[in-house]
Each structure stands twice: as structure tokens, then as C-alpha cells.
Length: 214
Image (spheres, rainbow, N blue to C red):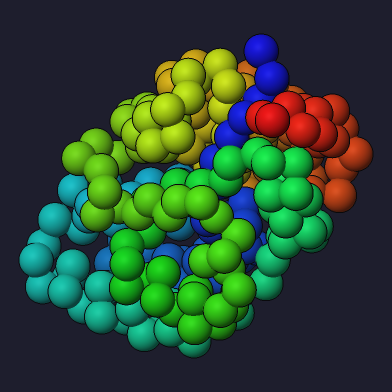
């Protein structure tokens, strides 16, 4: 069955932001959990609620972290993963539906749109944490995206980098492409159909057929 829609995560897929988040969370984790070195790497790909529930249950800590995170994200650099912008625009020319499916909230998205006004136009739909009742690794977000376009999971491909995101896409029974921007290929290969370093990989062209939706 031809692929008719492509769904993209945000951090580590559209934008190469994970190294910046490692810096932020590294500081937070060393401050509140010096007994757990490397904790910032263990929480990669988790939602803020999941991180708070597991590691920062104190409400005052949460408030301080959220305020710091909001300020940090407003000043971050949002650099595209190599080839991403051209790749997404090429899908639009092939009449492939595109959606951003992210655990980020609307406040974060406003920062992204301010840095890249063209970004919103890359997608037929933008789904954020406010649209979901269950967080990744639940498949809800990707199944919701497929339903938005009246497509079956078999007609969709997901681009993800984190363990929770990859598990979400796999549970949704969609084709899964793993980006190695956050984790090495050997760590995620069992959760995806194949891995790529970025969107310059020519194997991606074989997923789509020009005019397949006509």
C-alpha cells in the first residue's frame, strides 16, 4: 500500500535541538539530583509531565523548572536537521499529506513559529500536547493524525528519534523511520524499519511515489 501521509516529531527530527536540551536538563538534574549523574540522558524523549512525575514531584521545583524552560526555549536556536525543509516541501509536491505530531505545547510552538515563520506552512496539520489525552509511547497521537486525513496506519510513515516516540509509532502500526540525532542507530534499530542520520539519505525517496494520491 502506498504511503499517503508523513508524520514528524519536532525535537530531534525537524530541529536539531536535543544537544541544547541536554544542556538545560543537565543543569536541572545536577541541581536537584546530583546523586544521579547522567539523568538528563535517561529522560530524553519523555514529556514534561512524565519527567516531573518520576523525578521532580515537588510543586515548587516544577514551577521553577517550567519558568526556566520557557525562558530557555524562547532563546534557543532552531536549526533544521539537514535536509528536513527541502524534504518536507518535496512531499507536498508529491501530494503526500504532512503533519507535525509533537509532545511540545503551544507556548513552545509559538517560539518555533517566531524563529521560522515558514514552518507552519510545511504541514497540513499541526498536533501538539494540547490535542492528546495520552502521551507517547501511547499510539494515540499518531492514530489521531491518521484519522485527521482519513487514512489507515498502513498508509502512513512516522519520523521519530526518541524511544517513546518510536514506540508510539510502532504501536500505531505505521512505517517507522528512526533519526539517529538523539540515540545511536544500534540503540533504536529494533523500534523502526530503518534508520537515517538526516533527510539527505536517498533511501527516503523510495518510500514515496510521485502522484500516488492522484
